[in-house]
Length: 176
Image (tube, rainbow, N blue to C red):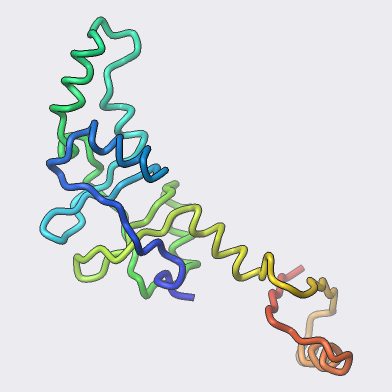
């Protein structure tokens, strides 16, 4: 299952010269948690809710609301973006992408090939993929079959299901 089948393709992104205030507006408007930073059709960074929160003045600041807004309208994304980005190819397996996200403790992987950004895979995309693979919400029945391990066991199970005139649309095998 390649990443390209599950990634988010319709992207909202910013340039390095976008202000923090503009990026925050985009996050709110599109209900996002992160934005790729693109310059000359190349991925150059990533900005997240966390990096933007760190860029904002502390709540204990003595700055007025006007001074804080001035700072947020002057600070550029290039000054706060994550530059060392972990990416994945659109042809990589979804399992490899999930492993990379878990091992690096990140919630997003930009999908990049030959320097071009094709999409992103987020933790939410992974959850949607799991539901799709499991057939969640689709008509039919979910069967849990406990069977001994061995050669030909799966064939016997499928033959019995076929004999009972049951169509198998999805099959997930979990080792006990």
